[in-house]
Length: 530
Picture 1: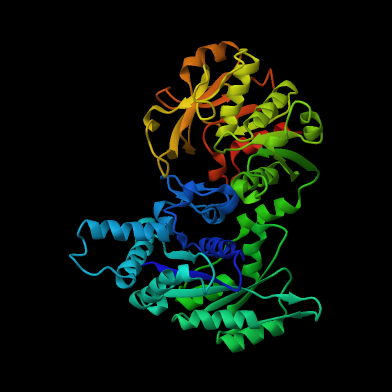
Picture 2: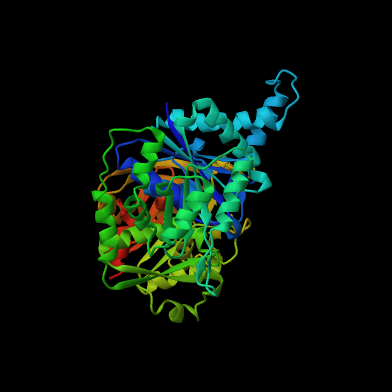
C-alpha cells in the first residue's frame, strides 16, 4: 500500500507548495521509490481548460488528455514521471461527480451531504491515483491557503484518510511564509504559529514545517517554530529563494529532508543517488554567453501562461551551454513597421499556442519577418497554424488566407475545424493528449528526434486543411510529420537549404520536456540561434 504525503500552505498563497512537493518527489525518487503526484484544487471549475490564461496561467495536458493545473508540469519535470487524469481534482469535479451519482440513484435516497459523500469522493480519488500509479509514495498538494472556505472539504478528507490508512502511513507538510521586516531587521515566526494553529483546529497536526523566505531563515527562528508548533527541530526545513528552481531539491537534501521524511514514514533501506540531478544543476551554472529569444504571444503580461514553453527553452539552454533571456513581445505590438526594431536584438522567435483572434495579425507579421529574414522560428500549435497562414498569403498569394477560427467566412480557410469537432461544445472536448506522429526522412524533425515515429501531446480543435497540401508542398512548404494514416498534418517546415530553422508543430512538445531530458526540438531551435 502507498504511503501518503499531504502538502498544505499557510499565511499567503503563491508560496511554492508545488515546487516543494515536486522537489521532495525528486529526492524520494532518487532513493529508489516510485512516486505519484496529485493536486487538489478548491476552485469550482470542472478543470482549468476554459479558464483565462491571464488568471490561471497555462493549462498543462497529460498523456491521457486531462487538462490540469500548471503545477502538474512542475511535478512531471521534477519527478520525470507521466501523470494522468487522476493527478488533478477540483471542487467542481467533486461536486459534479457527487450530483451525477445522486441523480442516478447511487446513494439510494440518502440525504447527500458534505460529510460523508463529498469527502468520500475526494478520498476515493486520492486512493485511485495511488492505485493506478502503483506508487510507493503519493504526494498530494492541497491548493489554496489554510483558512480558505473552499479548501475545508479537502482538509477534512485528508484528515479522515490519515485515520483510515493509519497515521504511520501519512505525513503532513505545512509550507509557511516567514516574513522579514526590514525596519527592525527581524524574521517573524508568529504568522507560521497562527497558521499551524488554524491547521490544528481542523484536526491536522503538521509533521514537517517548510519555511519560505527570500533569504535563509535564522536557526533561532526555526528553533522557535519547532518549539511553539510542537515539531522536532530537524522537521523545520528552510526553503529560501534560489536562482533556479532546479536547485531546490539539492538545498532540501542538504537539510536531510528526504531522510527525515523516510524516518517519519517508516521507510527503510533507501540510499540517495542525486548524481544525475547534480550534473544537470552544474550544467545550469556552467552556461556561458546569452541567447535572447522573442516570445510572441497574446498573454505575455502573465508569464505563467507560457510556463512550460519557458522551462523547455531553459532545459535546451542547459544542453547548448548558453544562458537564456526571454524578450516578452505582445503580438498586438508587432507590425511591419515595428518588427525590425522589436526583433533586432533577438536570435530567434518562438510563437506559442493560444485561442481567439486577438493579436493574430501581429503573429502573422512575426512569422513573415522570421521567414524573410532567415531568423530561426519555432511555432507551437497556433504558432504552426500562423506559419501556414503566412506562407499561404505571401508565397501562394492568397491574401485572404486565414483560419476558420478567426474568420468563418474566409474563402481560403487553410486552417479549418476538425471534422469530429463540428457542433462540439467547449470544455474537455478538443483533440487532447498523446497522439503518434510519423516523421518524414531528411527533415529537421528527424534530425531532432532521431526517429521516424514519435508521440507528443495535443490540445487543439483546428487543423491544417488538406485541400491546400499539394499546393503548399509545390511552393516549398515541407510536411515533416503527419498522423500515421497521413490524414492530419502534424508539422510543417522549410528546408534547411532555404532557412536555418523554420518549424511549426501542431502538438505541444513543451509538455514532455524535462530538465535532465530536454525537448529535442527546443535544443535544435536554440542551436540554430547561434
